[in-house]
Amino acid sequence: MPNHARGTLGRILLIVGRLALAAVFLFAAYMKIKPPQGMHWSPATLKTSLAMFAMEVDSYEMLSPPQVNLVAHVLPFVELALGIWLLTGVGLRFSSLATTLLLAGFIAAMFSAYERGLTISCGCFGPGEQVGPKRLVEDGLLFLPIAIAVAVGAFVVHRRTRARTPKSNATSA
Amino acid sequence: MIRTQLWRYGKQYGTAAIAALALVAALAAAGLPSQATVRKARARAARGQQSSAAPVKSYGSKSAPITMEVFTDYECPSCRAFFEQTLRPMINDYVASGKVYLIHRDFPLQMHTYSGQAARWANAAAKIGDFEPAESALYDNQTAWTADGNLQKYLSAAVSATDFRRMETIVKGCEGAAPQAKPNRGNPLPAGDHCSLDSAIASDIQQGYGVPVNATPTFVITYKGQRMPPDSGYVSWPLLKQFFDSLLAQ
Image 1 (tube, chains in turn purple, brown):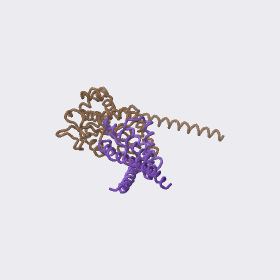
Image 2 (cartoon, each protein chain N blue to C red; image 1 turned 30 degrees about the vertical axis):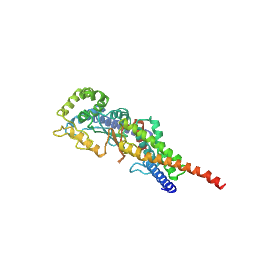
Image 3 (cartoon, each protein chain N blue to C red; image 1 turned 60 degrees about the horizontal axis):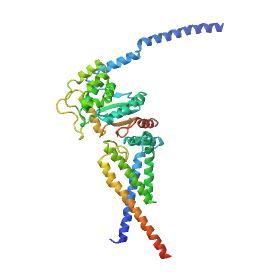
Image 4 (tube, rainbow over the protein chains, first blue to last red; image 1 turned 90 degrees about the vertical axis):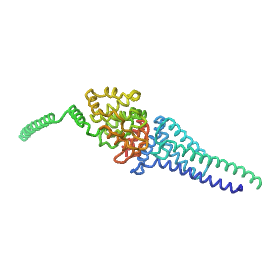
């Protein structure tokens, strides 16, 4: 495969990976903040949804109630912001790096719960989904590799672009 | 002169009103039962249910805005922690104040040796109106009875001698295999004959299959008819309370 064709394919994969991660994070945020069934969007139902998510975070038995509340009230909005950031493609190296770290954190928490024998709702995409091998495989072998690939790709593209820029400047000069 | 007449009428009507009030109070005192009488009547009613009635395994008023159904296994350590640290303060606070109606559902897991038998004893206690002390005794002494299966030792200490004898009578003939929640969601009733208590336990398990309950404890919260998604695992009381408060503020 010629170099330019490989570069184009790489860029396309980078865009696809970035959009896939953005979709995952936006969906995860939506599922956490959407009002419970039968209720309408309002500040009160948002509070209920976040309180429900707080119970899921609490079931991991890793944090004290104030820490749980902090995580539960901040995380959905971090996911939302990260989803939008990935969607824009601005500063992809940093957004993909943040995504990788966040996913690694999620996997570590789920693995810890699974190892301790806790059969709990993972809270990943709203209530209901359980922590277990399926969830760990999905996050560990699908989402995390995509995030790592996007981060590596973004750094490689950036380095190449930077390496090319001074040369072209020198030629033109 | 008008003043004198008014005084006379006032005196007459006043005396009549006081007499009427006294009569009403006397009738009320004679007709209305005291707190102790009400308590005794309730206990009698509970005892009168006998083995044919469904056991009452709930706390609080049915008219509470929030209903919480908890599927638990008496032998599961997370269920004990959930009962001791979350449900107990909840019963004392939000159930007592009429905000929450708590329903216990049996979900004895196949992996636990004595949980089915414990559920039978709890159901027998529920039939005679002693579910609360029996449930507390089972969780408080979980570590002890799970070692040797001697449930009677702790249950007999939790209820009166008369009530324990009633429980023994109900449990009589329930020594065989008890109903269990199967991982493949199969029939919870043991093969062959089963005792009178088993149908209530099996009914709870079948309800759990429908939720679906994948682990214990699992709880389902319903607020004004709106059922929330089920949640499983231990949740601390401050966070559960926060959730209830957010629902009550709707």
